[in-house]
Amino acid sequence: MNERAWWWCGGWLAAAGWAWSFPLLSGLGPHRSWGWCAGVGYVAAALVAAGSRRLGLSVAVATAGSVVVPLLALVLTGRGQSEVTVIERSGALLLHTGTPYLDAPQAVEEYTPYLPGMALFGLPRALLGPGPPGDARLWCAGVFLLCLVRCVPAGRRLRAGALVASPVVALPLTVSGVDLPLTGLCLLAVVHAGGRRPVAAGAALAGACALKWTAWPALAVVTALLAATAGRRAALRGALVGAGGAALLVLPAALRSPGPLVQQVFAFPLGRGYLPTPAASPLPGRLLADLGPVGWCAAVGLLLAAGLAVAHSLLRHPPLDAAAAARRLALGLAAAFLLAPAGRFGYLALPLLLSLLAPSLNRGPSRSWAPLSSSPTTSRPARAASRPSSTPWPSAGPATASWSTPPRNRARTVTTPHSPSP
Image 1 (cartoon, one colour):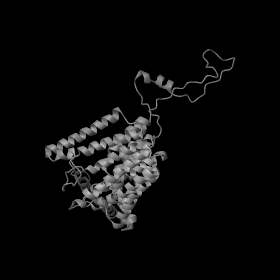
Image 2: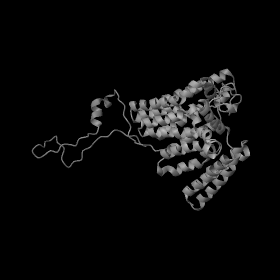
Image 3: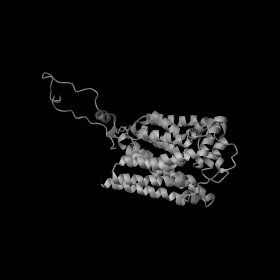
């Protein structure tokens, strides 16, 4: 067995150990069911990689064991995390009342800590009734996979497929799926921005920002990427489409029930709602908030400082391709989740997934846009001299040739704008 097959075999066995830890440590039934099934699938994938060395087949076996079989089993039996029920209830409320939020929730399960766009994934259950076709997980997974197909070129899909089969994606896709459409739309936005398509990037951003407010940092990252690759006007156009589209999706429900939206979407996840949030993992921000009001203010201050640091890095060193933008977004989200007054370890799966998918993204055109500068080296004559000419050199006959006319057979050297390495 070659070295590459050894690496794949070891990776699947590590995933199997991770999966089999859930039946032993988790108190959630869907997690335990996924762990037993996924562990068997990963071991089978390791045997395929070690025996036949067919890596694509091992990915297919792992996907069947960690995604297809447990997802169908949980959907058919109606089991899943509470997020699935919350999304489907919010879809029914949106359909019948025009807002996905209850006016006076009495328990944590009655809170909807998502923006109104997330309720769209619950509409199929409200329209189709009980049964697998209306399960919100299937629609969340469908949006994520469609975005992934658009973001990853064909030559890199083996690695992306292995990531989908890994516990980082397979577990949330099977038991809840709530963060996957947000991740897919953010990836689609940075890929469109790297390809200098500001309107398409803004449309993807609008969809992501209407799902959860944790996607809002992507607006700054995509704007910086557009400014670096397509110019300030394109960046402004993309930002306006993203912010305006998100506002159109959010404002109707926000105007109908502003109080419940503020309490459930913003105050509750930050630990300032009427009911305590169950997101209580011992992360740095949560540990500070537990010290009292002063600690909570310190956690919020550190969170704002981290946001300003990321914003400064975007201004001084903007990302130049989709992969760099995805990594920058992952860094900002990881800092936010670590320093937030309330959080859980599962939130870190989103920045981890962004960083792992970054190398596989379609980077688009590599030529960057050079902004105007007052430096003598980038003055108007210098830029004109470095701009490729659109007209050919005139041919000079024997009667008109002079010392300043280039020879006919000598290749003309054209200076092209600097292009960053992919």
